[in-house]
Image (cartoon, rainbow, N blue to C red):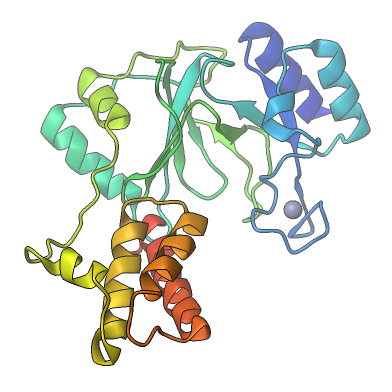
Amino acid sequence: MENANLKAAIAYSQRLQWAVFPLHSIEGGQCTCKRSCGSPGKHPRTQNGLKDATTNVVVIEKWFTMWPDSNIGVATGVASGFWALDVDRHGVNGFEALEQLTDHFGKLPDTVEAITGGDGSHLLFKHHEGIGNKADLLPGIDVRGEGGYIAVSPSKHQSGKIYSWELSSHPLEINIAEAPQWLLNMVNKPKAATPVKQPTGHWQMLMNGISEGGRNSAATSLAGHLFRRYVEPSLIVEIMQLWNGRNDPPLEQRELEIIINSIAGKELARRKGGK
Ligand SMILES: [Zn+2]
């Protein structure tokens, strides 16, 4: 039997110089890692994952012979010479946001485009230095750049569908386009935080320590402030503990942890495109 995944992986790596590596796949609706993993059929099969991505045909042959059912991951960024807009229609519909953009700025150029197994799209654009990964460029739209990867045809999606290239947008048939300047500006710009403005003196008052009545709401406010600014979670815990020491009396350790966890959960949902 012909090994379609091997054949495709070789074509991508040899004809397009894309750096490929094997991902787990879907078998009977389950991830081939046979665990309840967080990203069925999408996570690397080799030990170093993305760092193993290569154009070396010997290595690629070895992988896809050892695991013929592997999905195909392609490293985005300089390794393969492109970055990707990852547009999703589940939960929030990224295609609506994309349409609003193109209505405003004009059509995107014809470029290589895939239909993902989840009915989303991958739009590929020529590599530019400085483009990394970004979740929620707009609701339902992620960016895969340096340090990221995408699954490509004929990888299997958890839905049972197969990743495929759009008709007349196959990478072996057309070139990857240069992204328009407005899109590059957007992708390069750090995502603006949308902090709620606090009245002057609020933080100062808060940092002086809070008495019993206001501690809960102050802790919520401070944790929210730090998470929205993408401060490292472990650092947030430390800052919150130092702050709590100034309170009179301090919150119980357990109470403080519950507040931090609850805010972390909300922030995670927000970053995933919830609110
Ligand atoms: Zn898995």
